[in-house]
View 1: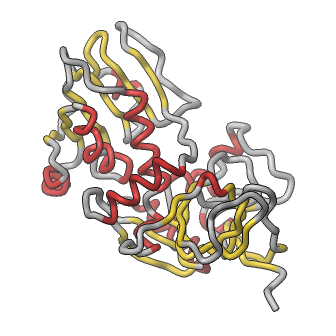
View 2: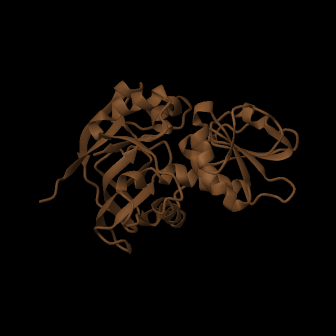
View 3: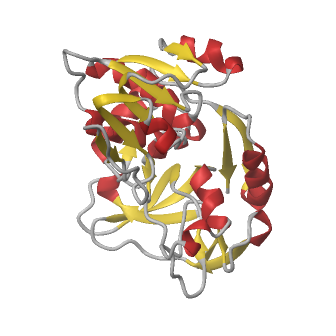
Length: 305
């Protein structure tokens, strides 16, 4: 007989890692177009630390009466399907849930999600590295959609935070859109960045045709763009004010099953980096948050329910 409850992590009153709770909640059956996934892996992202720390509650973006779920991306196995779904039970999948104001998340044993938002994980890709692709891979791909193809009169793209997850994907993906990529990072990250095929700098030098601001430098990043260039940020609720004829955009990542399938395929082939630093049990979610908050780790912490 199947369980009627499952374990999930959340915060009631946000206050950092110590406010994370894990409890049993009722199993939800998938509705039309939905599937229930048994989660095998859920990465810890900086946005999760901000949710647990109350950043988005303070901005008025979260208004949950009981609890706020943690976690955005995941990989796992489909265990139940609703009507109108062509994903089979037993399929290995990865996906993304977005938005801050929700009482569920991917730090859980199970998740009900729209089947259209999922992608099947290639057979030769383990579910743990697969789980690290959806949020940051799709963010990078959608930043590139906002940048567009590099114009013939200026293709020099600076990626801030290039050694991080989103930045690493940008360095790998942007040349396919005609961009000549230089990464901004700390000197100790030079070998990794050059290994992605990108140029490298540690200096905030102005004059770039475009800046993809994965490090959320905001106004400091905008100052690096030449007059008439393009800036794409990662904080859709706080874009810098446009100036000097610069086109200013900010990505608001959204699920995209077909695009995710492509990214997973390229990860399985080794074309895109999948960096896992450590795998911890769900019970150690607070420890994972503390470790990520310390910084300096280039791989991902992944929770395993």
